[in-house]
Image (cartoon, rainbow, N blue to C red; front, side):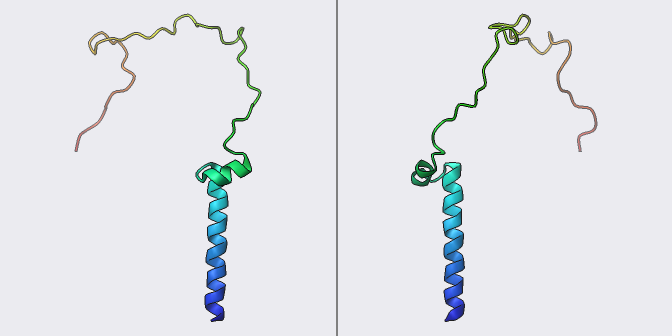
Length: 81
């Protein structure tokens, strides 16, 4: 009887810990409301226009056919088994 009581307490503790951890990570809505982990945070990150202009030259996408591409980004070398 003492063993079963200890086992029940251990399982209960594991369930509570799992609910708290999953709630903090946002998987349990009620618990994440209590922790406040469902609200966005202001991390203070700003984009400086002198570092990142609105449109950087040379970054426009180009769609090429396979024959037009001069330098493939990935290719296979080796043997197929």
